[in-house]
Length: 446
Image (cartoon, rainbow, N blue to C red; front, side, top):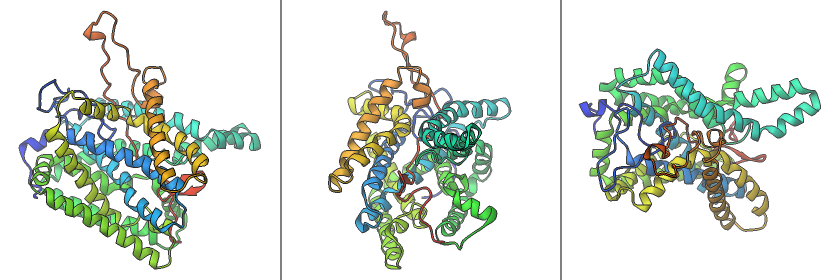
């Protein structure tokens, strides 16, 4: 596979016609009976593979939280499963970088256009982030206010807003806002280095290894370095490789498609090899005397290998789906609905996961409790968000304007069209209650 540029690859344009990483708009349906890609307003073509990657990764996110809530920190097999499920964070940051570059590489927003881009992202991601920080952090804020006064409670809320720690999944929205902020730099990098993107990616991977090695195995740090390590889960540099990987894939989408299409057997071996590398690393860390929760951390350096391998595998699965997809068929519509609702489901699913974990963890054995929690939380969250989409709460619950009902007279102009939004659908994080599950603020050396 080469990274040589081609004219078609330099014209992604517009907004990706998919909610693929949550940074682009909702999926618009293809014309019935047509197998060609749809063309969104900005000229970018719908990447159907993205829908599959996004939905499968999203389901795995709930799996991470359900597993983390039911598996003991000292469980060798349970944490080994978590190690493999931890690809979700990497995958969603790849999607974020991919969608942004696919959407804007040919026409980077500048001046007033860039300000509109930032304001829109602030509305569709920042507002839900602030509201859900208040919801999930209400107990801590009220407790602090009752103890130390109103100003102390306000300070507690401000701290939660800055840190992303109101609940175990909100950090991702905070990091997404940082990605939006540096979009001009990301676009400049991949546009000006378009003939050397392989070197850019290699350099980013080396930097990522150093960052993860420092997070997991570096000596105790103090001052600014200590603060950076403590808050690494909510800082963009911690995930820079995944954003760059997605950006490079967007610039070379035709080449990526061609390579994965020709080498599906090799892709399967890559995925198996990546899983083997992650499992072997986990076993070696445990044998060295460190606890399983530490060994399964999403910040283990081997995640560069496993995360990349599984993303390639998921994209190839998306290709297989697209080759057999029938536009407007029930499976196609189901996938599009899943993409539309997934940001909201991500925001609300911990309510159900946490409640079910408290109820079932000690009553049912693993993995039965894990499976039940995962299925029920997914179904309940989806139902709640689907209902909220038809109310004024839609923006804060789903990151999308309220869906309007079709007019009674059948006027096509009155029918609801999914809004093109720029919300970012996250990956997993760390704790359920006070239990670390190995994502955000991991158990780290030192």
